[in-house]
Amino acid sequence: MKERQPLVIGVLVNPYAGIGGSVALKGSDGEATRDEALRRGATQQAPERMSRALSSLAGLSNVTLLTWGGLMGEQSCRDAGLAFDVVGESSMPSGSSDTRQAAKDLKAAGAELLLFAGGDGTARDLVDAVGQSLPVLGVPAGCKMHSAVYAVNPEAAASLLRELAEGSLVALQQADVRDIDEEAFRQGVVKARHYGELQVPAEARYLQQVKCGGREVEDLVVTEVAAWIADSMEADTWYLMGSGSTVAVVMEQLGLDNTLLGVDAVYNGELVASDLGAEALLALIGDQPAKAVITVIGGQGHLFGRGNQQFSPSLIRRLGKENIQILATRTKLNTLDGRPLLVDSGDAELDRELCGLWPVTTGYEDQILYRVATDGAVNR
Image 1: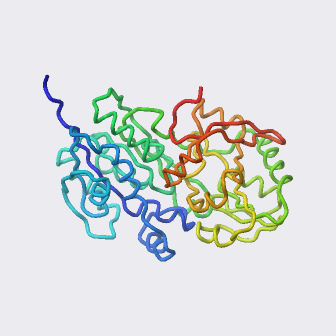
Image 2: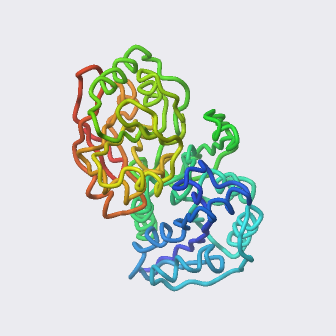
């Protein structure tokens, strides 16, 4: 039997992707934002998330890895315990031009699939660098991930990589790359636009869907959901109000200002602090009773890990599953077409702990049970 040729994977990491998320900067684009995030104590998570995705390839002899030097891929391959060849290197801190150059050089060196860790800005760079000439697969690591080129989490990317490496039949499809205006985003306005398309392996249970924008058509139902939460708030308890339009209606019911795309803290009906990062939230609530109020990203179904990285693994563990309230109308849940709600907190062990059936508030005194998982297998 003729031996199968090895799969050549190009590994590329944007080491600063998502660095502004946990410190409430709502993005990472631009040197000023990156530097401010580092000043606030943000840590680079993209290299570690890439190493988690690569770990599935350990022990496979039919895979060749090409990568970029240092934190742009080499370190992730090394941490995963894999053999690799370094094609080139950029000086740090890296930027968009480095990502584009690395992608072009990895393709020229023979990569058959480009595995990258980043956010929508990174995907945009790949549209410019390789377009649809090379299949790509994204390991989600950014703040804004409206595009459909990402696995739902690093472990899903790992599963898909292994299927490809083992020769399974995996279809290829064109996927939408979208990006938003970060300056408008920080002002609470989402201006998402189609930027281009990339080719991705087509396996729906592993890939996130395109983020659905626009206002919920069920305005009355959303108001009922918000009214129930507002009426049910307990005294002497911190409420961490997550991002999204549904939670914004809760704040409207309370008569409070709201950071549409941030996390605000409410105590005894009063807005105490606005637009807080993960560490500030932990410090604020201390050991007092606390709850989180979050909603579902329409179309994708993510609870954590998309646009609300302020809910860090440490904060989620501090709150506990029983103190996390999920709001979503039945119409929004129906858009998932049976897929589960997703968690991608950045901590694989925590994500597994969060799996299972959760109560979701869908109206006034109305809740349903819905499955939470780490992959997008249809819930039938």
